[in-house]
Image (cartoon, rainbow, N blue to C red):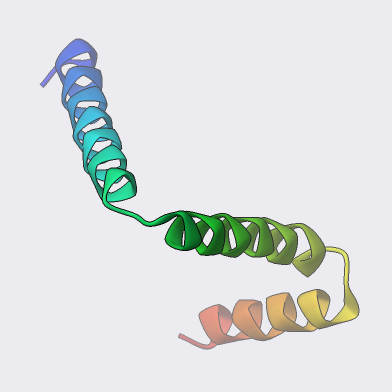
Amino acid sequence: MGLKEFFGRWRKGEDERAVERAEEESRMTPADRDLDEEDYEAHKEDIRTAGTSYAGFDAADVARNELDDH
C-alpha cells in the first residue's frame, strides 16, 4: 500500500466520522448541545492543566513507572 492509498483511506475514515458526528448533532436538543459543549470545554481544560499541575506531574510519574515495570 502506497502513501497515497494510505492517506486516502485515512481521509475517508475521517470524513465518515465527521458525517456521523454531524448526524448525531442534528438529533441533539439545544440543551444536549450546550452540555456537549461544556463537556468539550472541560476536557480541553483538563488536558491543558494536567501538564502544569502537581497532580498532573504525579499522574505522569505513576504512568511512566507502570510502563517501566512491564
